[in-house]
Length: 529
Image (tube, rainbow, N blue to C red; front, side, top):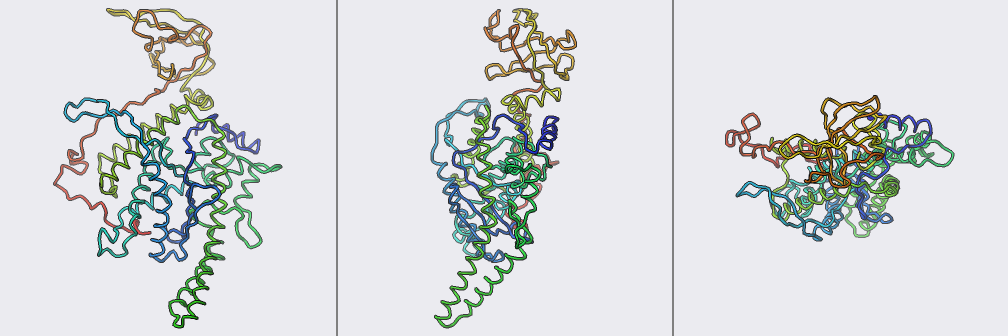
């Protein structure tokens, strides 16, 4: 944990209120996000119990599985979920703009710019906590390989038509959420924890009610007291006043309220199936309707507090100004969304259950590169984040006290001015180390020359000064300027190109034809909800 975050947590404990660890919002927030609050059945991993989902804060759609062990009712739930999410996705897929991107020419092998379609915006999904991200990935995995009656008339338990398509989209969003800085699928607790530090552990921050209690405690109480109340307070019936943010439910709710209600539903359904007289059937149908309504009310009572808490958290985040690079990262999310839209429209098969070696290596390299890029961009956007890097010796700031014009050796001498910076920071500078500063949005590099004094550092500016013999105006710091240099690069470089999957060496599953690959859509226990 960075030192400045530790200091913020200590201050939160002392003050009784969460302390900011950022001055700007480092994640893009859509003007119309889709909030998804799922609940699952205890004792059966991934089995859906119900959900609140929608884009309207005041009118969420309630989806319920009255008997989670009934496969048909589960498919009905998934079909209803698809009826909510897929139209929201489709509403963003048609609105496109023309954009340029760099691609490799297959004939020449050179990088060229081509014009292509880019979705003007992308749908954003919000779940309450990190466990919600795992549930979205599980839903995607369990749905994308399902066969519909149209695809396979002989398939046992055929899925409703749009369920596999929703599974492909949820899988894509689940994978994209693992890319640092991505905002297509966000866990609200993670985003809030990035911008505020509480006086509790990171694990305790995953309780949305407790986290919000630290951020906005009631008058006259401390964050710790409010968080304890949110986690433990129960009503006279023994139920939590602030239900967990899911997808798991509280055992007291399961045992005392939900299980008896499902049992009454089962009895009513059995009685209706056994009814022979039409009048008797009407009475038993009314009893079944009452039992189902009772379950719906119970599920809503558990999910609605979390639904309201998610929107409260979004309000807190919207009060922060957007970070300078947040929109750039969102553009990469739009490219990701557009690319998956194109793959779906082209009729490509669903994502495989297991990536091949090259794909897995590319994903890992991408995530490492995006993590380094995110850390650099957050520091450049936010002085509070930069302060943490300065405390860690990864950056320094100070006042320019002297500028001496000098020139490099060569056939055509280029300007290499020497700049002396007086600073109280203690950067970890090695001999001839490179440092960087942001100049009009572009990184300008300099080289560490020497320490002129205990608090003075001499740097040699290396680039971004134009092509002339004299530096362009504004490209070199002047005496009295406040400057900030970092020891980390502002832009991350790509790694070496990996071989094509068909050219993968034998150590990673190749060469092709020597081994029979595992079927990508083989059904496993993990695929069955």
